Every structure is written in C-alpha cells, then in structure tokens.
Length: 326
Ligand code: RIB
Ligand code: CA
Image (cartoon, protein in one colour):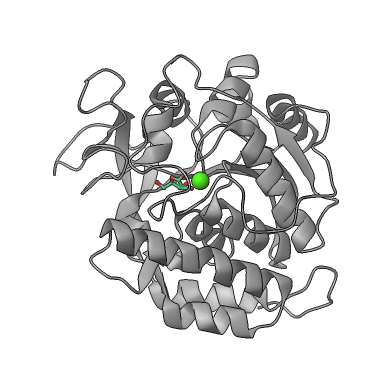
C-alpha cells in the first residue's frame, strides 16, 4: 500500500535526500513538505526544500513554512558545533542546486498538518526529520492529531553518543520542549530513528560514484550532497572514517518502504529539558525489568547495504516516469 507522507524538514543536505526519496519512491506519496527552523534559518530551509523539489521536477508538491524558532527558547540559533559554510558544515546555508522557481504555499505548516490529518484520518504518516517545533505546535492546537495519525517516524535522539553535545542529538537539542511534547503525546506508533541507527547506515564514496552514475537529477543531486557530507564528517573526524557519512533523514524515508532497513525495540523515552550539560538528551529506559511503558520503537540497528540499494533504486527514477516498484 502506498504511504501518504508529510515530511517535516529543516533542509539541510540529508533532509534533501529524504525529500527526493519520498517524492520518487513509488511506495510513498509525498502529500506535502513542511519546513522548520533547524540546520539553517526557516527562510533557507524553505528555499532549500523548494530547490530540491524543483530540481527533480516535483515542484507541484506544496512547501509550507512553519516555526522560525523553538517553542520556548529565545536563545536559538545558539553557537553551533561548526562554523556555518566552513569545511565542517555538512549542509551549507544554500544547497548547491539552482534557485527555485516555485514558491512556498501560503498555508502555514501547522495549519497544513492539522487540516491534512483531519481530511485523511488514519492515512497520513508524519515524518519529522528536523526539530519538532511544528509537530508540537500542531499538537497544541489539535490534540486530536494523536488519534488521526497512525504513525510518526522521527529522526532524532541518541543513546550511545550525541552530536550537538556529548549528550544530545541536534534535532532534539534544538527544541527539547517540543520533542518532549511529541514523544509523550501518546501516538499509537512512534518510531524513533536516533544516531545509534543512522551511524550504522553510512553512505560511502563508492556509493556516491554509483549515485552520480545514474545520470538522473536525483542521483546527481544526492551524489553532490552526500559527497559534501563525507568531506565535512572527515574534516570533523566524526565517524572514524574519511570515506563515508551518515545521511540520517533518508533512513527514515527508507524505513517507510522497507521497514527491515532498521531494527527496533520498544522503549520508554523521555527528553531532558533542564540540565545545562544534558539538555536535549533522549533518556532511554533500557533497564531489564523496567515497568515503564514503552512510548517509542527505537532503532538501534540499520542495514547499510539495503539502505544504499534503496537509494540507488529510488534515484534511478525520474519524476513522472512510469516505473516498476523498486
Ligand atoms: O542529528 C542529525 C539531524 O540533525 C538530521 O536531521 C540533520 O538534518 C540535522 O538537522
Ligand atoms: Ca534534518
């Protein structure tokens, strides 16, 4: 069954790969893209999302701009772990794609999410791969979202190691109060894809060559974006390899069509919203015999070979091309 998807993004190089995947895979119908402050300011996450969709000929997919700051905090953007547009920046303020010809939809992200979920009860999968500000705001104005949306797939969190801080992964750290609201909202199924899984699904320079060799707009863009990620991760020494990098957000879209690309276990997860050094940490109750009721299916493993195969198969498609199920 084709999954109807709203992708909530802070585009961002890995968000861009996720957008292309959801727009091109025949197993997903990308209903709309909602943008949020995160990797870059909202004006850029919106502009970058439009660039990506235009580039692959999917300019008809609506892009809805959302929150330009976290729900509660006034101190964002805070100092980042790398200097914007430096060799350690795996995104860049503007993605290296032509300026968009499409424009953002006048309906805001929060309104769009609520209206679409209410119009299609039980049918929309929400996939937030940036800070959770839009989803939390949508929950605040429409608590019925919890009943309307059968599954939420979140890229965020970390158990073994953080990236923004030793304790915290960026998406959760960037709006911890929003993340706490979403994780504790009571969605029937919430799949959390943390760094523990995404760092097992690296894309290598050899994979980049294969993507570039597809000769499609998506293959070429993915190759360029992932190449930059690999250089930035190598400059930062962030993976212990200089020839491969995680493409976090795309692992969530791959999961939509091939759930076995990750391996999960049910866990009770809360978000630290207070500690100076630990703010944004996803606290996972992995104690044996815990009585805490799981609220997330947390991915602790990922199949890198399958992930790369899915990227390659999906980006072989051109928009509008009649193709067989990859
Ligand atoms: O920590 C990884 C996440 O932070 C990804 O969603 C990436 O796009 C960055 O925003
Ligand atoms: Ca992201």
